[in-house]
Image (cartoon, rainbow, N blue to C red; front, side, top):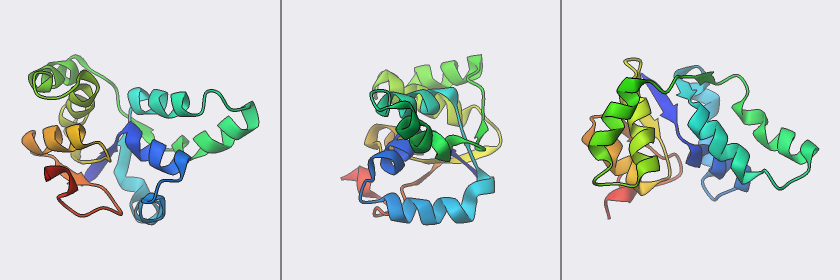
Length: 136
């Protein structure tokens, strides 16, 4: 199974969140099984935009080599189904993942993305957190 990495994954790594160690361990094992999108890359770049160039380049290094999937019309369509229940960003994130036949799960630390992904039949992973953390 392949997993879509949303922007919160990169925020976790870039900002050194408590889950960063577990996430790094998971990514080491599953590097070949992940993909992301320009949306997640943009979100990560935004997090480090105010730092100097060398810090920014080092912080964004984990993004290199991860396959990027395209945002298609189907992604926008599927995302539009969820926009009434979750913020637009979360809906689009799930639409991107759900529209790709190779993606069966989402790695996220955003409760809106996690909930919407589950509704779309995607497996939700958040290394370093309890399996159902977003359901409380």
